Length: 130
Image 1 (cartoon, rainbow, N blue to C red):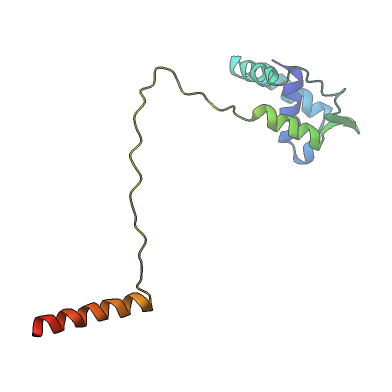
Image 2: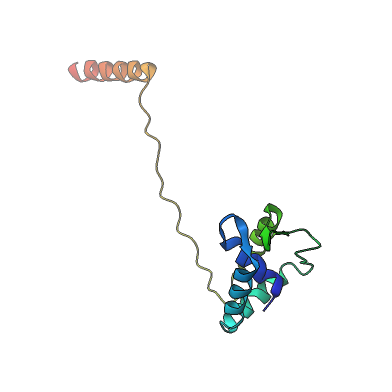
């Protein structure tokens, strides 16, 4: 279990990001005994920020018998939790995407086209009448 990542995760879960030391210790104990999933998760998150130092980088501050995460600490945690783009597996079959449905725009005849169509219709009518 990575201590610093765990502290950030605990603090961010509290309203205002502040937790008294007693609550922080209790939550740490719960997470430390929760199993391998939490330990693996914190190691994975810590690997995304190898130079993480919550005190020297001023990601948290000590206040009135507890610790509080500051905005910069929240931003660092968000960056660590952001999922990297998953590369496509090499053995995945590549299937061509179906072409998008063709939707032709509806063209409404303007006044010039209407006149042309009327003229053509008149000429056709005259030719058929003769």
